[in-house]
Image (cartoon, rainbow, N blue to C red):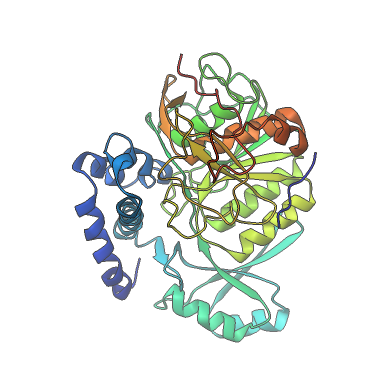
Length: 425
């Protein structure tokens, strides 16, 4: 296959977060508020946090000016993060860039023995782990009690200046899916090499998912069926009532959420990538969005060297938001979404590059309760591109399939993939 290569929170944290939370609550319509912030405290992260699709759809935001839409999306994102901190401050805090991360954990690569000894002497807990499939060693540091993550990161970089330190940042789904999170877990034993990879929430049993499915958990309580993971899986390999872009393809599913409020973290995603590489997965869908993280960037490079192509969604924070990751990394195929009229979704985020567009609205996908229902977001465009890449076997063949957008529209990358894949019958 061709491989694409363009090149609990401190009180001060909460004071800075609350104004954004207030703005979000003012700007979001009451019905959309319920979708954004609703759900029991213990509910799975994909089902609680990313409701931008629900906020956009039916709320009149599509009629807003670009500036007002940008303000609304920024407020919605701030409200999501603020709610996460309020509800799960014992598990989540902000790093030195004000990005959400697992509380009290720092990920370190490239540290020598002397640096690790110095960190232990400074009160850090140190646990080393080799990532399967990537030939990558990581030291997981436990921050000393009473010290914020932001402060601890500065300390680690001072003590081990030659190493690379980062937070265990969190990545959130790039769209909303309907259906209850509960459901029986899809399982068909072990799949062979060449399966389609999916890093997301777990996948529920569904009549449309007839191909072999193997799942593994990389978070507390995982694998566990989720609405988001099930919908994305169906758009890769569904048959019958929900037809995916590669019908019947075997799936290797890494659940990085489970029931962990700090699910979707960098460390979990990196381990999942290693598992995919070790199992010979050629294409992996990552419909998750978060900040730049050096460990994740390095893991994607290593996975690419092992023959893994990552296809990622650009997210739904709007074109005025900072570039989305992992979609913005070199070598990752970045996918944006279009609606039923062939227009870019107004909430579609941006990346350092956009490679393809695919349907992301006015469409259906599998529900975790066995039916099918409407989905919206760039989350659901990425699996269509990944499925077609798996089916075609090369990026060259995928480019040949891409359709040009209407007129001289920009922002579609190299064209539209799977333009009629909407499952609206």
